[in-house]
Amino acid sequence: MYANARGRRVAAVGAIAAAGALALGSCGSGGSTEAAAANGAQAAGRAPQNYAAVIKGLDNPFFQTMKQGIDDQAKTSGATVTVQAANSITDTTGQADKLNGLAGQDFSCYIVNPISGTNLIQGLAKLSMMNKPVVNIDSPVDPTAAKSANVKLATYVGTDNREAGKMAGQRMTTVLPSGGDVAAIGGIAGDVTSGARIEGFTQGVGKNVKVVQTVAADWDRQTALTAATNVLRAHPNLAGFFVANDDMGLGVARAVADAGKTGKVKVISVDGIKDALQAVKAGTLEATVAQYPYTIGQMGVEACQAATSGKTLPASVAAPVELVTKDTADKALASTPKPFGPYQDPYKTLTK
Image (cartoon, rainbow, N blue to C red; front, side, top):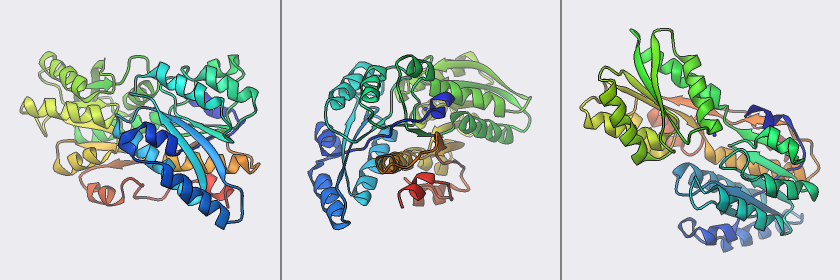
């Protein structure tokens, strides 16, 4: 979900809390989160921190898990967090309105997970004028737009999407030793994250694997099912699909099953949501490149803690990614929503 938004530093950002949880009924009440955070801060002998976070729509399990990571780290750190989410993962205007509203309130740090590279620029410009630290997670703010609006970012934490795509491409080459034609299913047309993953995939495949068609499916499972069905009809000898997220990947796997080609047409996706891990274990997905929204959320709160303590933050931090195949699916399921392998977290060191 780039590169250069990570290269600038400035403020630091924000967190999560009850108000957002109330607004998003499926996430439960946030009152107990605020109380626990305040009590934890008092017990530790420090003033409670008050952060805000604006993330993508909770209609997608990836961002539900991200919110869980923010909430859990807030409780651990004794911070009070207010999380607000877009109504859907395509609600760019609604998400911008939520940030604009929060920008007028007295939060000490803001965490932002923008739907597009530019939809939050207006609110971020307000925060930069007030010298509020902003932490950018998961999807990067567009660096050119940020520079034009004098937006300052404290740090960026997220998946290296090209590397994730490259890992998928290498796996596709392994499972198609004789090569073959494959298709790529992306998210929203023009989306930076989707584009980076597909670019990485094409870099990762061997010379005998050819991407014959790329289509956008709006990050939606049903749309991806329809798109994959059409692609299979157009390319009856297709050997595989690379899919830019797991939700769409599960739709593509259904289309492959409907065509009676499960196991014959390999499907590899990105995200590592629990349903996808189970599908890998069952063999309906060949693999998923698991990224960890829970950990990204945690690290966002840690970055706010460090920023509000006056620490110097790294310009960017790569979140962990792991290739999950049938051989490692049980290990990944046992550990989810956390990584099953070791990873680097410089923010944790800065908060000690």
